[in-house]
Every structure is written in C-alpha cells, then in structure tokens.
Length: 443
Image (cartoon, rainbow, N blue to C red; front, side, top):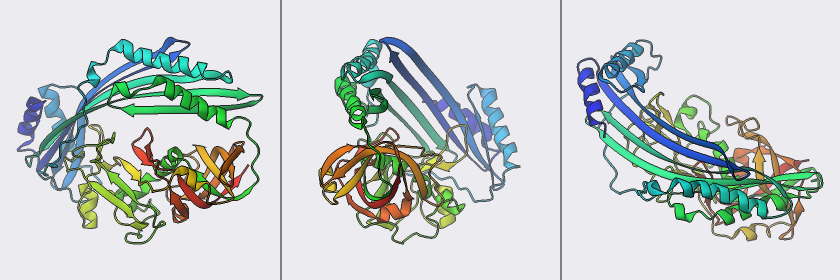
C-alpha cells in the first residue's frame, strides 16, 4: 500500500539528500460510552500522515504532512533538508536495509472488522446494566465503554528497506461506585482482545462490583513497615511507572537511576524483566520498530542482574551494541525509544501462598498519584494506596486509603516471592502479584 506516494518522495529526494527514511501511519479508532442506557459519547477518529527523516552532510532533519499530494511531498523533503541546518544532534545516524523476522505474527483479525456496530453498542449497554444490578450498594456506574482500533504502518528508506504491517484490537471496561455509610469506593475491570466473542459483559461487571464492594468499610492502618503484596494489576502499575529507567536514551542523558549498573545485581534473583515484541498474545506485538529494525525479545533483568537497556540504532551505536528494536516515533515526531510487551515474568507459586509467608501483610489493590509521587531518577515513590490487611493467611478487612513509600530498586531487591497469576494492564505492561519484604505505610 501507498507505494506511489513513497516512490514520489524517493525520486525527489534522491539527489538532494544523503539518505532518507519515510514513515507512514494510518489509524482509525472507535469508542462508545453509555450513561443510563443512552449513548453518552460516540467517537470515530481517522488519522493518516507521512513523516520523513533525512540525512544531509551528517545532520538529521525531520518534516511531516497529513496532506497527500505530490507538491506537499516535495515540500516536506525540502523542509527536512532545511531543518538539518539547525540540528543540534551530533550523533551519527546510519540507515540500513534491516532483515525481516522469520515468524509470522498473528496481530490482525479480519473477523474483528466484521462486528456489527449495534453489537458494540449493546455490549457497552450490557456492561452498565449488569454493573448496576450487581449489588444494591452500587449507586453509580461512571464508566461503561468499549472501543476498537486498527493501525497500519509502512517504513522504507533509501537503502532498500520497505516494510509494512497492520494490526487491530478491541477493548471494553466498566467502573462502578459503591457506598456504605460515608465510605465510597470504586472498582474497575477491563478486557482487551482481538476476538469480540471473548467479551463477557456480566463477568466484567461482576468483577468490577466485587472490587468496589470488598473495599467498603475500611479501617485505619497503623503507621509502620509492613510486608506488602502488590496484586498483579498493581505490580504492573509499579513497573509501568519506572519503564523509562530501562531506556538507553534516558541512561545516556543521566536521567536513569540505572546509569553505570549494567552487569550488576539490581534486584532479587526471583526478578526477571523482559521486553518481548514477539509475544504471541501481546497487544504491542510487532514485526519491526519505527526504523524497520526487526523485533525481538530482550531480557533486561535476568535473575536480578541488569543485562541490557532498550535501544534504537542511534543509542545502540553510541554504546557500541546492537539495537533491541525499540525505536519509536510517530510521523510527526523525532526518533525515540518505547517499550513493547514489557513484563515482570511470573513466578511458580499461587497468589494465596504469598499471604501465608508473614503473620501480617498489607495487600495493595489500587494505587494513585503515579506521575507526581514517583521519581524515575532517584527511584523514590510515595503513593496513595487502597487495600486489605491479612493475618495468618486470612484477609481480615479493608483499609482506609493510606500512603505507601519506598524506593523502586530497593523494592525489587526485597522481592520475596512472585505468583503465577500474570496479567497485562491496558498499556501492554504485565506482571504477577509479588510479595515485598517491607515498605513504609502511613495513614
């Protein structure tokens, strides 16, 4: 697709640039939300654009357009060349015809595109209905929604590279508010899939309600240091907050607490963290990155030892290593780095076994303030949490909102066990429940 557009750009740039890379992305997305069984929001978005990255006299320049005609294509080449003159990035950039991966990735479902619009709307309505009917303590369903999306990307360069890929997905989520006296709590659950038939509106609604109801009637927590269990969703949330420390660009610019620690032990031996762009059921699975570099599985932390950072070709060249296939840029932006399917690998024990390892344990099932309360440079965090007190392996009662504080690296050094209940969050970051030796808790 879009071969003619690429040919026009390559032909015009041939004698004007030393090298050129063209990135095209075309995306469409749909979402519907329901309130009182009526459509509250109905959105459809369609975006398409082409961005060029050119090399001229050792300098790099960018430009892009969302207008598809020959004169505009020529204009963005000229604009990118002009921008080279003002580039402050002196790092060497090299483009190549990178090989393709051997396996076929199943990331596009033709059946998903055939789902009737009425069925999508009915799913969102069912989520709200089932949630309201789940329990008399539920007084509001603030979110009941579903959506889907399709993305197409094509990248090519003047060295002969020419790759394209398409993928799609659909999601649904519902959140409920429950009350008991003056105590109000929220619960939410979600599902992401490429198979519409996998949605179970009643189960999603019931699970959301159960989460909210279980938190009602919380008691104050006594200030102190406690063994902590992050459930699988909150383990993923903690991991997501600190993904940037594994990006080579952050390390090279001194914005990562892992600078200078490659090859060192930074976590308990039970901890293995990977970025796997080839994961069969992942929702960030892809055959290549934004430079066309082939995707791979990268082991970042292996049994507690820091083995690698995430690289694009530019950061890899600076460190004298190979790219990990984590280049990222939109057609509007410059080259950066992003995670794909970023995972704390599961352990081999049941979640229930975690709570039997100490007399008293606090289970954390909700965290807030991730952006303001966590520092990726120092690793320190102080976050608002919700959860439960466990005694001798039995859940005693919920807790009033509290603050949990600690340090990311120390926390991973203090991991005592990881369960086998791996789960992705809504951002392709996954983890299992984990037991931490202790963290500071205050009411």
